[in-house]
Image (cartoon, one colour):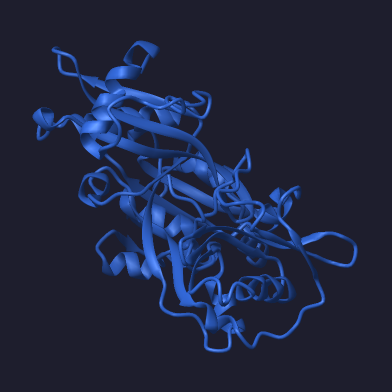
Length: 369
């Protein structure tokens, strides 16, 4: 995409997703944060794809990630492989740009599963009545308005697998309504970022580094009782909230996100491997990757535990495990064990070492893109 394409790209996006006829002042935004690709039918542009330059926490380290978004194809050009061509171009571009991972949200997963993306985590919301927050004990932390506080360090300290790096930290709510929890030294131990929508509070982030912070922030939401009926909470650790609330937490509403490993050796090198410190030095396994759309990393790789981390190298040795590219994302994120992936027909062989390297859980984002 070039600046000459901006107006037509807006029209393509509008035809696909709706919106105003003319772009607002926020379009196209900061071009240093994303890269665009267009498809040309010969009679004009007929498709568009955006790659956001993001980073995602895994194992306590940030792995560069290309966030695919705004994939749009004109109605008259659909069914001709335009979207597939854009996605294929994006794979090559992400590898060249040093983005060994790619994530996306989609309502049409078949297209992306066919190119190697697979469900690997969720964004979760819990919707509850404010009365559910009553009965929480008092806390020792002080509560202050969110406005004026830098909560970037607090957000990064949580670093749950799947969370975005947020290089330029942006709060989505009203800082006059949000709160921070401060310890006796004035350190930020948690924060809540929220908006008011009619008779509901929308909590965009609830980040707490310990139970005291979580309780004082939940009590701050309960103080709206009488003015507000319901609260919708997005949290990186809903399990913690469920343990703290007197009646637990209602079943969350989930939105899945899909992950693809674009460059296996680079992804292994960038990720943190806390579990490797628990394995014997020199523990290794050979993994064969089947990936027709990213041939640069197809083939067999030897993973070796050295110095509390994991190294990857090409090998001609016989593989212990054979993985389809769709298996890589769920394994890398910790969303699925190799035994689950074997039962799904996405890999074969012995995955015991791979399972020992990655902690199982539910990877979560606090963002959509």
